[in-house]
Length: 182
Image (tube, rainbow, N blue to C red; front, side, top):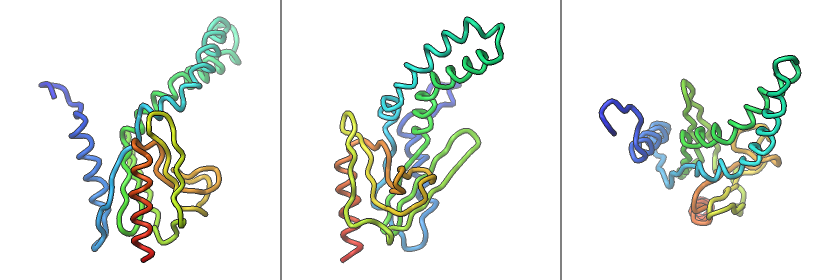
């Protein structure tokens, strides 16, 4: 870091987030894997919002001075334009952890910290891998959760979203689940 620059460099930020996971460990629990979502993959996945938000904001901007409805559309368009960048920034403040007992997700953003914990005793027999661009993807491994829960898909399946090297992560999760069953 440069003098006067209070932003953390990548290794320091990652170490800080890893410390957040380690503070959540229970006695006798050991960390098997930690990782973070790929912010670039998150941005790429949502970049289509820019193609909707840009024209909407541009057209509404012409009429915003005279119309409340156009002002609303302008604000919605700007929100769509910013959406991918905001999601990518949120991904940078998220860390995933797999222990010998549960899966953990810690999300930190400005003034907010959220922890999600899922017991591995409810894990599926087989890990599901949804591959994305560039080797990143989603690793799903616990079914039957409420669909509105964060890090859960529309079927109620929980997992680690947009992780780099998703196939390797899926193998690590599968190995841990198999070890638990033995």
